[in-house]
Length: 301
Image (cartoon, rainbow, N blue to C red; front, side, top):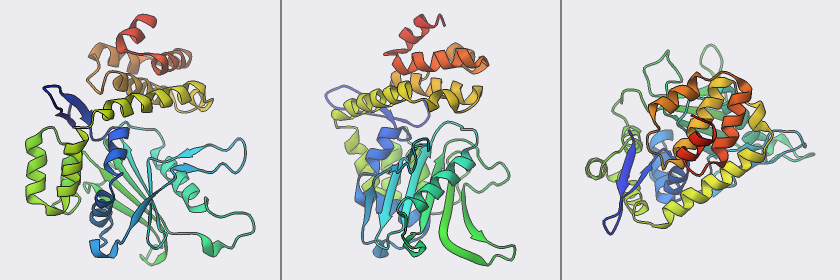
């Protein structure tokens, strides 16, 4: 699979994608990596980023039926600027609306009843997407701000960055991050580190991640928790149309399969299904399955 890196010890090989949720979060658990990434993406000189701490990715629910907000990675800079970083591998319907929803929630999350609006912080959303989201532009890194028709900025409190991993590189600071997320071999990683001194820390972290035996356990625990939540939460049944449910099913099965390629006939059958009740049944089955074979046997696929 494109973007899968193999590493291991004692003759054993573990495979993981740098785009996978648990690996992506483990990479950004390192402060030097966070600083370098934000410096390259936001154009902030490294010396001006004194610290960037991780924050709680769960957004408050202000009333019972409000949708729970869960962001991939939330960072806070020295000046209290809040930054959401998300890796999205699978195409998602209404993705732009979803990003605006999370940005708005992040912006208002710290404001309690009776508090003044001046407490609201600057918020930045950074999305790394592994599919074409913006077909009308060849640029892979697009930045959106609040401005009028003449280009005069209203405020810098909201800022959205969309980085499409599949588009042609442009020869700027973000290129090597995209190369890193696509890396498939030790040689490719070494080349990135040799050419870009600022990326050496990230490359070293990736190498070390491949040597940690608990990484597999982290993967298993993460997906068990996610399957349990998807099994229990009512929103699973209400979100998305057939295409979205099919992608969720394949995403779950790919995780169960250790991020290995799924059989093409299974992919085609799942994507071709349009009956909502069938897809709901398959999604629940995929959430509980311990293997792809178990899922296929249970659903006669």
